[in-house]
Image 1 (cartoon, rainbow, N blue to C red):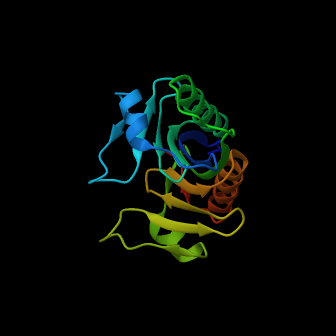
Image 2: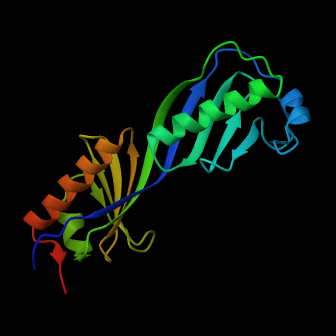
Length: 186
């Protein structure tokens, strides 16, 4: 069967941000009733956007964590949108947010099944304990990512900092699986 191109979908981008000033989360909650803030349960306030559909955690230190976007660009856009809304709502924010992508999670379909037992024995830095987890945990060094490999040919790639890292990791692993004849095509 021919070498098929993997289908890669970015499912979540986690980005951290800072505005380099303190935030009064009680004041934010007062001015934005939709913002969730329960300091007894969690020290951050949750600011949700409908577009891009994300949740941004706001901390009193001025740090933020944005989750749920489908690309790095959308994560930056979401954080900036939160800052704009806060300013419009009367929260004084002096600087624009500095955003850093921390983790990109993607879902992949290789289009064929994988011999997990053989993959675990053949691929370096791989772990397979089927009693504990149904997939092979493969750690890549360059780019530094972790890929979960399932018998169905589905993968989850995590730890990437750029979309390019996702594609590089997946394509390198796919080539290795092909080369070692660990792929099964029906």
